Image (cartoon, rainbow, N blue to C red; front, top):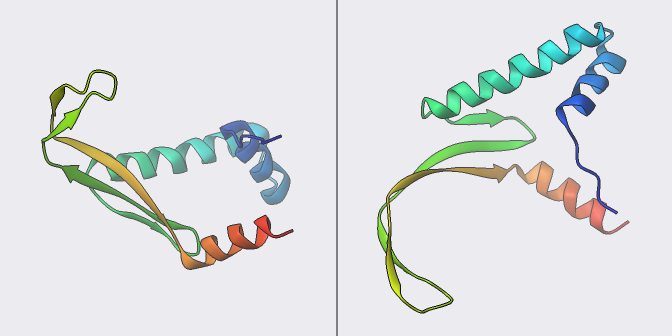
Length: 99
């Protein structure tokens, strides 16, 4: 069974580990996430050492195909968010799979 880590879980971890109040912990998590989000919206790259890099890519328009009908349809240009995990994170996840 897989578990999903939520904002509440992060706030609770800050509460336990740092010793801020629950409200301060929740606000700290919100502030950090907002800062990351604002940077990405502004087109900045967000690099978190030993974790990974979030970046925005511009994708050009192209022709795609509807898999049901086979009909060609244009796909409009768009900005997409990508995440590249650090080598340490990749290794840590891979080690977790071998346990």
